[in-house]
View (cartoon, rainbow, N blue to C red):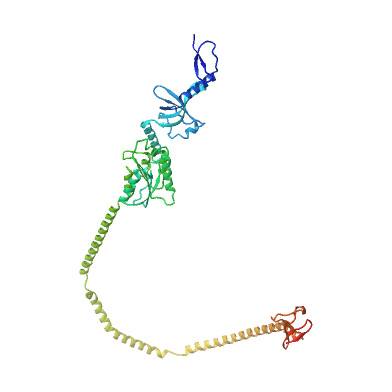
Amino acid sequence: MSTIWDHDPETGEIIEGAGSNAGEYSVTEIAHALKRTLEDTFGHVRVRGEISGFRGPHSSGHCYFSIKDEGAKLDAVVWRGSFSRLRSKLQEGLEVIATGKITSYPQKSGYQIVIENVEPAGVGALMALLEERKRKLQAEGLFDEARKKPIPYLPRVIGVVTSPTGAVIRDILHRLNDRFPRHVLVWPVRVQGDSCAAEVAAAIAGFNAMAVKPDVIIVARGGGSLEDLWGFNEEIVARAVAASAIPLISAVGHETDTTLIDYVSDLRAPTPTAAAEKAVPVRADLLAELANKGARLQGGLRRGMEERRTRVKSAARALPRPDELLGLARQRFDSASGRLVQALKANTREHGARLNRVAPRLSLAPLKAVIANERRALDVSGKRSLRGLTRVLEFRRQRFDATAKLLDALSYRSVLQRGFALVRNEKGQPIHTASAVKPWQALTIEFADGEVKVREDSPKQGKLL
């Protein structure tokens, strides 16, 4: 008798039954029972294998590919939300360890793994990923020597990106104090783990955003395995280094360790201690060099002065003595001074003779004629000026008389001449109406021939003061 597989309605498991009277189940029921069995049996698993058929994310954002090894192939899917959170980049042929949940896909009667996280499997996979990133960044020109900035010879402030509690920062500070003490700013970061790359990139950008920036940045970490140093192989760190306007020294791992940051940085140091040595010179060596150059400068000055003194002395011996240089000129001067008195006398006699010859021909008549003409012209001008001034004065006198008559006609005194009087209060202000006069108020009455002081002693009569 053939075996009949039955379905347990309580547990959902497929069980072995017997007889021909077994119940019938739909394809969907069988598929869902298998799906629950797979998910309950395996749950979350870690699967190691090689990525196959990877074509990048679908238009929906989900990724579909396979994970295979020598004997089998497992379909895989990464949902859009999980794909954006993956730390490792998926690529064809990469050996990985995928963490996820085994489930089935009823529409294809197949099973698959829904991946939540992916990490490279072993050093070989990490090296392959590292080489791929290295080729990509090199093609973009991030490794070019032309873009690297020179390290300042003696920085005033040094920024250090490293763990604040490790031996690295102590080694750097100790070496700086031995060589040339400088002001150090430490930006604490994790140098290992998932958050390492993001913190290091943020520290580099933070130093560049400061108002008072350090003159040089040191990114340092002690030695470790490839997995331990992997945070310094992330693209986010390499691009942060390339975007830094501040010169940067990388000192990650030991001398044999190499990370992507070493290719992008402006200078690579084999160890953190070597980075401190490359950042500053030796103060004692500088002082010794300064003293040596100062001594050489003093010696050079002395030798230069001595050489010039010798050259002056040599030139002086070839020159004639001052008495010899001035002797001929002095002799010519004495000779000329002896002839000068006689020449002045002869010159005076010559001019006297010429004056005597000309004197009889001189006459005052032309000069007198010029003076007479000038006097006549002056008399004519004086008479014209006098007539003009007289006319101007007469015109001004007539205008003044007319203005005076107009002023007299408009003056209140002409009214007083006709018998009227002007009444003023104690402030000298005119009073125009009787109602404006207050009892016992002092008043002044002005007539044509003088003024009279009065005081109002009743509403209807005044009293002379």
